[in-house]
Length: 596
Image (cartoon, rainbow, N blue to C red; front, side, top):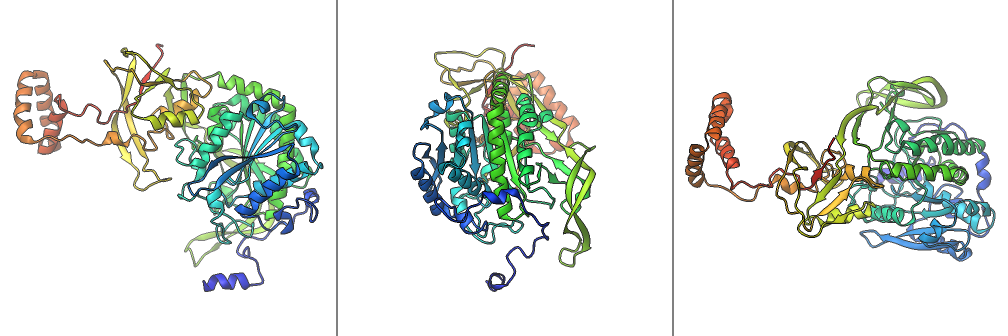
């Protein structure tokens, strides 16, 4: 408390501990207004602060009141604390329904701000842009695109406001918290769907089918010259490479050009390999489907992740975000036909095999990079060498970049997944993901092509991650017979989101429902055996089955640990009896594969 009071009353700002800044001025400063109708909270604070939830919702209402023929606000869901998650729909001619937007010959852009509520640049930038549309200054924007705008996704985290939520971020003065009221990170929830916030977003995407999804964040990590960094799954790692090509060759150049023209420095979406020694290189990250951009790549939904540079002033970041919106809208308007063709193509393609896990390459590529000079010093606090950024530009001609190019795990894509009716929440989540699920009726029996995954080894996480105890396992596939599939659900992989369905339902995928712990009950046994009953039964069983008796004798001879462990011996014998739990360690979702 005393320390906080000292900081608040000091002449220096709360940013005194952060590295020195490279001075900045940009043409985008002309976008701000200081008075007049619909001046934003951000502008009234001279680019220093952001409004709270109530003020934000009030401004949404003011925008709609100022231009009801082009703006409409809707609730897309509610947080666990009961706060409404608002979305503003902006369309040129009162075309607010999903069907109208899909048929007005313009692409739809979904802008999402505040998934991490402390990273709120996207909200204030969009408010300025929408104000300019409402007042007629930027009437051209709605002639190019329809806009869906979620000002705050993490509404509960947004209200956990403090000056002390992000130690490595310059502004706003008060910012929200990273996680929601249940301490869950929304941008780790795109597969398991534990949060109403992310479920609401996926329902919007399914309903409105936007041509592009923009998720606005702020970085952690190292210092460099770029103020606006963004990216998408690169073509070499993409499951939607046709989309990646359009984003890289058509959309990105127009965004970069607009940012550069307005005094900003656009940069790649990368992270330092070693935050204390930037020269060791940067990480070319490829997102998995738990993240918005990784989910979008698998779902065939063009998705761009913005990561504004946390060490740049809030005003600079927000203005750069406005400029990014402007460039993206022009690019989307000009190239949406090519993007739509790429979407249609990718959603019609499902490979025979799917990469579900990648590792960083051992050997780097090299890129030019606009860094910031730093020096090392011996820290008496940490007891090791630390880095101190010096606020001076340092350009790297050949900085190593380690992309996640190495394929760690690839799985065969089934023709169908079969889900028992005992898992209705899995069915519901698949539907939220936009995945087609078919109910099986009648007395349909399976054939020998059905396979089941049996767990051979497994390991539970030692601590929870995102509220779940994740599980890692190895499997072998076996044929299953005589399963009555009546009342089950069938999920074909030959569908628009078949690749996503495979990542969710194949137990070996790192972001599958299995890996997130949805099927942990298969690791427990609830019927027991007593040796007074098992011992005579086993003796009789071995007498009647010579092959089993030989196998039992072999294990005793060759495995001394097994031979000296009465519990292990009886456990092995129990597993051979018809009394043994036939669901133990068996993944309940079945699979069928096309004959090769």
